[in-house]
Length: 206
Image 1 (cartoon, helix red, strand yellow):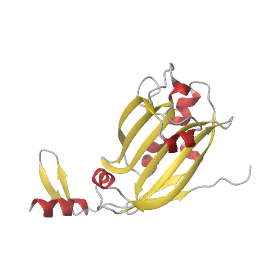
Image 2 (spheres, rainbow, N blue to C red):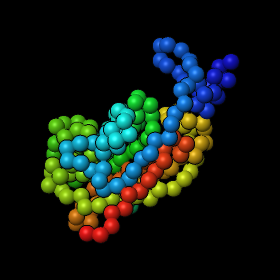
Image 3 (cartoon, one colour):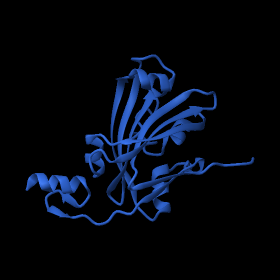
Image 4 (spheres, helix red, strand yellow):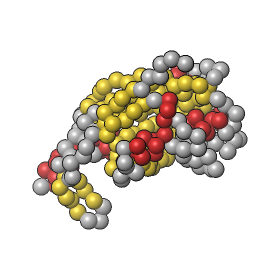
């Protein structure tokens, strides 16, 4: 019985509610996520702005660790030496209380150490996004590079997102760069393909 319940929860047919029980899950509509430079608004969270445009309440849970050594792949993406210290933040993004996106963000510790923005979700500039936080310490973020690719969810990702094990997800490797070409943050973003339609808005002209 328990195994059957777990299977139906992983498939999205049932959902567990802490302290209440297990219920038939409500159908989840696909969320349209627009990736665009217009997402970056002064003083606000890009994710919250995205969800507000869809008539949903956006929020997130996060866990930050300072002074984490950079693995080889992350070091290469940030243009630093493997083993250099970073600030790593793990996010679970929610739309109307339901998980729609996971992200693991890395920032060079040397870049923000001793400033008010060293912790992305702490201090007076918490939760306003990379572009606005960097601006607060005089760093202008000029552009981001995103590399999306499809793959299967890991068991942990499936559990957090409430999707079937090995379901298709879109994995986006995103890196923000300063106007001097320096990488200031890189992140691995994971969205379930069945729940998120990703659209890129590309500006043209001047």
